[in-house]
Amino acid sequence: MTEHTETIPDDETVGQRRLREARERAAERADNPADNALRLPVPGELAHCLVSGVTLYSGDLFAGGVVLTRGQTFVITDAMLQASRNVRGEWRGVALVHSPELQRYYHRGRVLFAPGPTPDNFETWDTYGDTSWHEQRENARREAHALPTEKARREALAAVHARFGPARTTSWSSNTAMTTSERDSLAEEAGRRAAALSGSPYLGTSSEGGGE
Image (tube, rainbow, N blue to C red; front, side):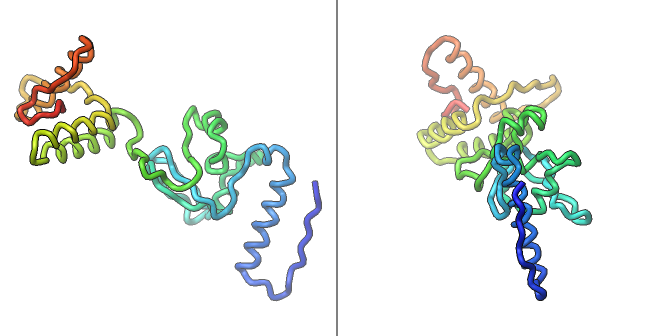
């Protein structure tokens, strides 16, 4: 390992000391072949979260960590990187932001973080059919149905379908009162599926138009 020495001034401030220590740790990581292969992020680098509910530890014993939501952008700090290293000196969590394969290996098949800020077209729902997916899909449908013309509604609903995919099959009990729009929505989805199976174009059945 290469020896790194740096002259420490007598009047070194707290900020200068932290910067010096960060540089020393970066130099140590650069001398470790295994770490080089990982392409560790550097303090100040942006990253974003891919899975809601992930806890990002700050490295501060008292501050603990923050629970992130999917699509949340954050700045990687040296303390975060140090907190990502286990007692055996192995990197985990945000330290693997540039290594999705290692994230899958160490985090049960999941990629938790990605480098850079959140892309503009990034979907903030985690999985098809989950609560956030359902809420966002329903909001988009309501906005589409509120448009003033049938043509606009059809185009907006087609965009909803392209973005979110088909609605999940809903089981209704015999004593559940369904609104007209809910009944129309189920009929539209059934019609869309039937058209897909037959290979015929789907023209829609809703009185509001649009097939959603």
